[in-house]
Length: 261
Image 1 (cartoon, one colour):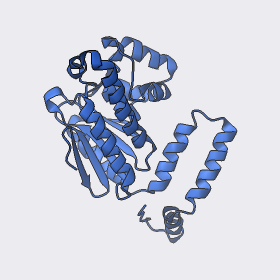
Image 2: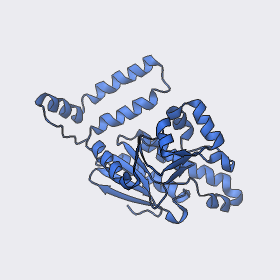
Image 3: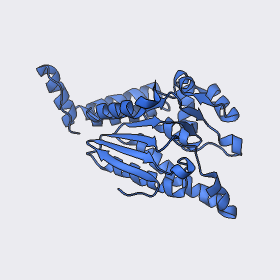
Image 4: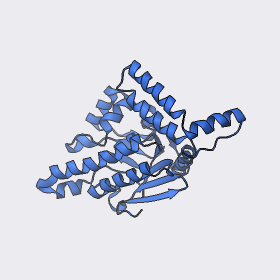
């Protein structure tokens, strides 16, 4: 696919999505939100895509929204912000609920909606030099990109409040310690390790991975009994999929399973 603000490349079963506005350090504008939504929809609809890798071009992952673009809208800013968040949130919803696991490779700073994008990913690999900050209230705005959903689940309510209200910058190690980041790696190894994880996930039982993602998200809002019923229904449904049948056969035959989705 050809986009103006993204690079989209499929290698094997892994779709690599690169934020690509290096002239503004990959800041998010309206075009990028539209293209993120379109790319996410393509990843969700294409059964040959079994994992998604998201990163940023150049030295920075994403500093958040393009403030100059916001200001340039003048009196139209309210409409512009509502339009941007509609596309952005639809895309993030696709990424969260699709079967394919989503891996973020965070290079440099992830601020504002850039941090939100990382939080929405299933696995976050951060370069040692990476930095994280919510940043929204610093410019008089409120969080978006699902961060008020994901952040408190990762770090707890009190720490989420601190990070939103004070905009404290976190090192990659601090973000790991708080549960925002899955793994911290040397800068030179970021893409190699992120691609290795994405490739590993792409070789897995995609339907089971996707259903597991959705169960974990639902578990935060359901009662124990309701969630156990969700688990019961899901595992029964997944048991009939080709992946599950292949995995159980491979286990009995003492061989490595070959998943095809």
